[in-house]
Length: 319
Image 1 (cartoon, rainbow, N blue to C red):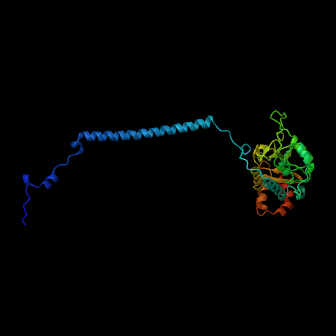
Image 2: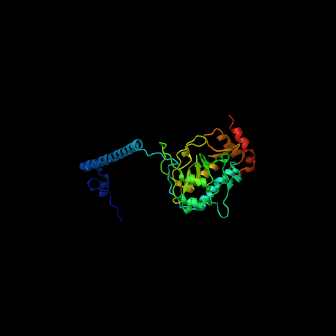
Image 3: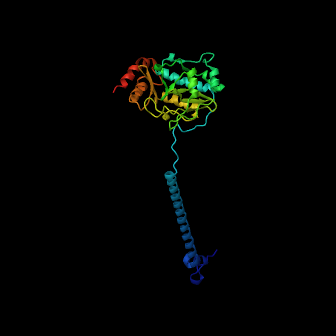
């Protein structure tokens, strides 16, 4: 087949003509379109700046509100004595078991001899039930008193703190029942107010002849009601240890934990018994001896501690 020669000038093919024509820019093709695109871009930039400004203003407002709230509307501080946990259901077995565990810790640490304690006989503790009823103690409280471990007899020379600032007592004695249910709280003005021991209350400890630590068998709480004896033997505020009203098992487990972790250390030095705390000069020394020298609480060398504790307490209190 014959080939036709390429034409030049006016007769050149249309493909060459199309590729060789100059390309028009956006500005040359349409000046109005360029202006529109620039306006759109400017608006987008301004919108982004406006959104950033709003975010900055919002952040500044939040910071200002937080400062004002923290400066002028502070919540009152809470402490262990002011927190009111939701009480669990009352269970007599749990209460008896936890109080029993506390006394057994005191015995293990040679704070009191085992013959100081009376554990529950098969028929329960002997109790003057007519006296309890005449003092308005309800049957559930009477049933608990029959099962709780308690000191056999406490002469003045045998008294000991159950927890810092609060002494153990023979719960079933007539004197404890009478005194415990007649206690009156002392207000800040040192004037007697109404009794705070109710028909569902069982007095667990006493201070200066007054009820101190009280368990309510209806709502399953423990609280402190005494206003007269406000410091422990070491001079610390008793509110550091005792409670206004909290779930009873929670309180008792906290006491057990404080003994096991040596936050409290039962001291029996020559028959003088009290609970040593971090405010006492011998605290750190005895804590280290117990944990490192006698492997408290796991692997505790109880017999060795029983032989040596009196000497250790004497040496630790020397200035």
